[in-house]
Image (cartoon, rainbow, N blue to C red; front, top):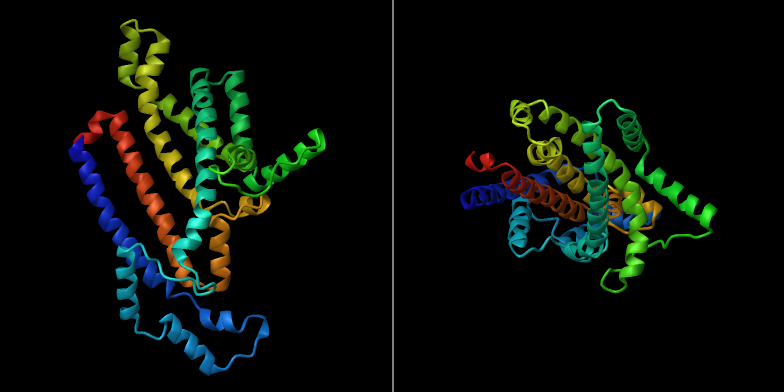
Length: 317
């Protein structure tokens, strides 16, 4: 097991290095000059000398290879540079907003797993029954309804039926846990419903496929109780593709909650990404892309480790 973990950890290093190099050069392909966008916003009349002076101050007048060297050296110190628009540290800008998106993603994942695994299992056990049909309709509805629209319906429903408006905004869970959870539960629920729908369908399909395997028939032929067959032999193997879906959905949520964050007035990574793109702030963009890529790599590493825990045969590959 230790050798398996070390091999996976060693694969993370070149992956992150390749992502960092690709992000740096691909961001430079973006059209437009961020300095011009910044100084001439709202039609301001700025001379070419002022623009060149700002480019020099930001280090954008240096050759690309020099900028790349400074960028890579900065990464070794976890220094992502400074935002071209605000002048603040990119790491600081991300640190202010990352906890919001991370907590919503974690809460949505917990909601999805708690709902989806039991429902998907019931669908597979009672295949083509009325219970299976009802759960599948609910799951399809979750796929069809956008999370941000469901969020607006939640707010309107609470206001109309209970004359109560959920808290909008973000307060750190370390400052006020009750206020924090009451504010983030509803966006997590609106996102988690769609998340649960995806996981439910995957859980149903995976368990149905596993329950047709030869070793399941062998266990039944030996007289093992059906509940024990499902729990010990079926669920453990059916969880492998489900873990993959859960991991990918979680990583996507870190930067993919743009509209949901707008609905619930949450200043998270998604909103920051949109603002950075609109302003052409490629220093901030490359920091955000690198962050999301790092999250995907770490999540994939954790998924691989969960694979090994669920199926010991994987440790030998």
